[in-house]
Image (cartoon, rainbow, N blue to C red; front, side, top):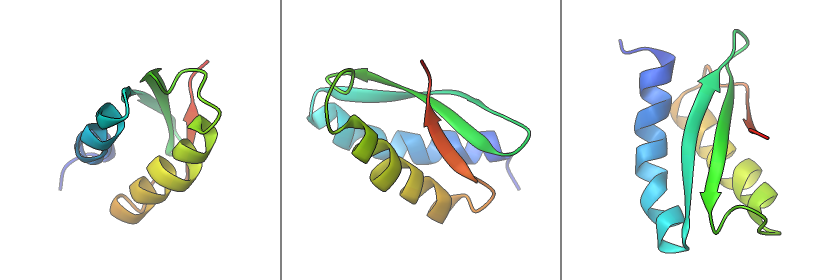
Length: 77
């Protein structure tokens, strides 16, 4: 079985085209010992009022479904 980080990256790669279609992007920053994933939103996602909704209801929901070890997703500052 591949590592949590590899599986998270694969899921982000699947999500990325949808974000890029809206002018944004997402980058994996890291995963801590509690399996909290930190991502950096890029492009149009930066400063977008909907970015927190995208992060929690989109990226986090999908990651938790596809990689059950993931406990949360947070945005890097």
